[in-house]
Length: 163
Image (cartoon, rainbow, N blue to C red; front, side, top):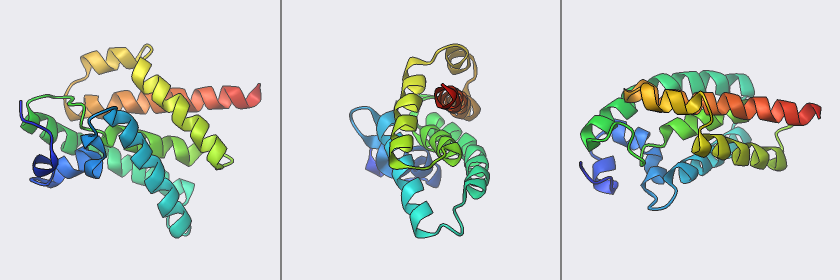
């Protein structure tokens, strides 16, 4: 197994993407740092260019990012010798962009709640997330379990909202 470091990340575009532009290289909790990167990039892009980064456009970006992520995570996992290496955080980024596209009102408080709930589901992996994590391999498997965690997050937030 190769070491995930800046040199490895910069050796191929797939590595750069899969490792969340460096956010996945954190020695502690790389998934959380990847999610934080996703949150920060969402806020910065949405505030800077709201005409291009509407919630609908974020859905398109997330869909395209999912497809790119399958390739990037497949390639990076292969090159690292670990199909779901902890430094690969593109799955968290895309899944959290998807969550944030649906968070209304899009306040800092609501986004923070979404962050906490998403990280909970991503780390705990309740069924069927754990099933997908164990049985779906390669780039698709890496990406898919986080999309399910995003769905659980949105479901929990919707339930919370109606209570």
